[in-house]
Image (cartoon, rainbow, N blue to C red):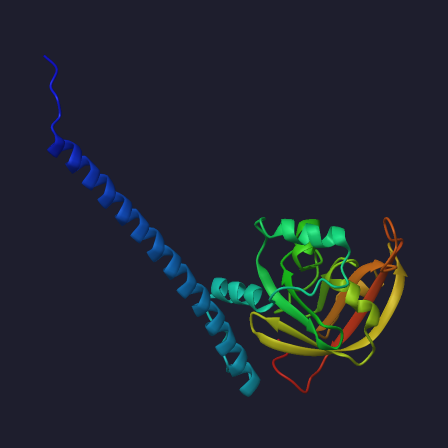
Length: 237
């Protein structure tokens, strides 16, 4: 004769399922809150480090030890881009890139005169440049001495470079604090011309994008911006 489960057993099962659901929901909410606290903590930590460098740029100021938090803070500090000059296809590529996993952010490049503020990633793949700008292979990172080569798409973030002028300031947020440069020259070169990508004794910034800015198809040339370190400000490591 089959054994029938009574109402009490069914009720107990329902209560157990309900309790498990509440516990899982609580765990999920705790994880969300913890993630937000960590994100805000990383941003705050980076801002405090930047303020310390602004007050005292001497080598005695030590960089914040948590590099991962600083990388996250750098990425957050760039904010959402102004896409008013972008090609429609590049806007779509940017939105698609938001779902992709990218290499670490090693800096934030800001050029106030043309409204550029872009995260700088560790490499310069097509996907990276859909999201921001990237370090050219073999060139220095923002926290290293030498020639810091940064490339970006001409129909995205770097389209604003068409309005740049010699003397304009550049701010480069790095894992060691802010560095300030000023634009020394702009030049249009052939694709294969690598002269301006050579390493330099002094710390410099070289921005690279395709040219002409509004060319249909594969652009035949490159637009190069070179910037020198402003020794009036901050660390020069």
